[in-house]
Image (cartoon, rainbow, N blue to C red; front, side, top):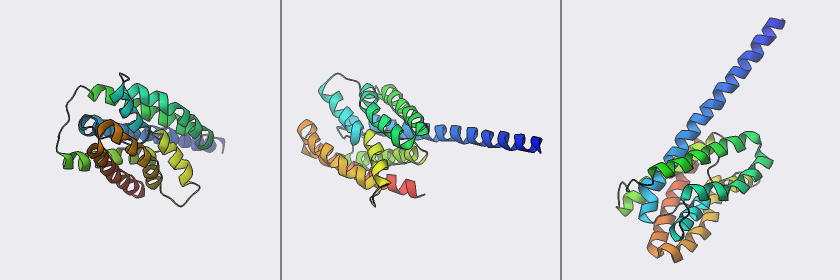
Length: 205
């Protein structure tokens, strides 16, 4: 009887260990997709993402602050809010995700944009971005402080995570008009519309 109980707990903890590292792997892939979307499609075409990422892009444009550093600094308060409501595992997975994103954007920064075609930038950039964010959220992490707020509000409302994020980002995109111009702001809004549709789709799979 004792041996069976020991074997049961060993099997349980082994499964939990494997599942946790499976989560880390998928979150790594999701954060890497977001890095690719940002550096190889969006940023160099003056198309911004929403949330803290969008704010970091704007700060990087008007100052010498690197995007990866801004992401870490600006996201930290939101992640600790998430820790208070969503637990230690959420904090660990989110810090891992944002670390991969920060490193990915740093490594890919010297490379030129894959395309300058506005249609391809919007569609491919938006789909890759939304898929990456959706994967990270689906496996228990977050890449952006606004996603943390969206996850919390989603638990207490009938709105989807993508809809809540889209509402928050409307104000960020509006402010980008004064930094990049109206055309780029419209492109950014169109890109994120595709991204948030992709987020919702990936979360329903």
